[in-house]
Length: 77
Image (cartoon, rainbow, N blue to C red):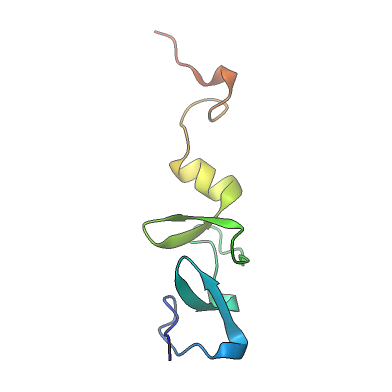
């Protein structure tokens, strides 16, 4: 029986959500930053931990600077 990576308890077939190559309990699959409950396939991963795509993953690991990657994100010296 697989174990949930978040709570370390056994995950039964009826309560299983597969994501990031692991089986999770549905309430355990949450964003590491904001704790929003995620659905399988609609989130990003960093170092094996789930994050919601927007805004958490983008803010933490995306391009830095004003506008976060848009045309106005260049820094001038």
